[in-house]
Image (cartoon, rainbow, N blue to C red; front, side):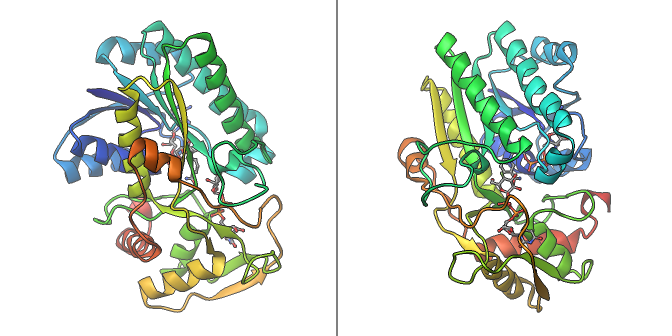
Length: 337
Ligand code: NAD
Ligand code: UFG
């Protein structure tokens, strides 16, 4: 069965490609390489001993996308392609709306035209805004606190409207919590451009001595140690959730929504201390003011994914930190080495 993976050279997609190939799927990637490198594709091919069909393609380019559907006989699409930096989305919202919204509309139009109506969509826990209670369940109210989050929310709404108009679509919306870590080979991982915005990639750079100390954004939240709490999930567990979602789509479920998280929350200080164990070094840090827009606590209730997909996260925080550190120390410059 052939799966088109948009944004397939990126962080989560590269781990998903590996799981797809190992599970016997054929993988076709469309990526414009705006935030990734061909090297991740080559590494996955090497790790699995299987080929990926790669198209350097922008999902805004309808002709190019159509051509892929004509050439390949796609069965289902996993749609990762998108811009994802929250801060940047506040500075240049139109770029985010153009890329994420227009890109998705173009993809959906082409899928409809070629009668490929199986879709897995990368959504985010950000669609819960500042949740009124935790753990977060899929039926809780949705809202957005920044333009990036708004693109996820708007795409979810578009998908619900599309499904209402035509029930022959099968759509799995996956709401990821905080993916971290890397494949245990240390050959693929997260490779952010410049100084990382997210906590664990930042901690990883401190651990290898590339950055001096971690800035802890606020220690006055209403949490046990005062720092923000998130549901960190190993990227390989997350990737496996996509295989389960693809399997689910073959049962014609209609439109389904799942949280992919572990159900456990860790604070910023928990992460720093677990990372210290993984790298066997002290991670220096300093408390700074809160980052605007951050919420105190978010973690998933992932029961629905367990009940309906038979999926649950298996890797704990030690493994997440160890695998992150292995990748970071093996390739300090990421794919640019
Ligand atoms: P990533 O940046 O590593 O991967 C995204 C990929 O999409 C990149 O390879 C990029 O080159 C490609 N891309 C972007 N715009 C494109 C376009 N117009 N045409 C073709 N390719 C394009 O990011 P990631 O962390 O792997 O995230 C994958 C998806 O998951 C994104 O949609 C993201 O919003 C979502 N998500 C990520 C997180 C996270 O914390 N990493 C959390 C929740 C949701
Ligand atoms: N943090 C720091 N210092 C840093 C970076 C982060 O203290 O240098 C703190 C934040 O304040 C927060 C926690 O670490 O409490 C996690 O922050 P991240 O930036 O790693 O992750 P977020 O939860 O803010 O957001 C991430 C993605 C979003 C996505 C969301 C849910 O960046 O795109 O997870 O999936 F929507």
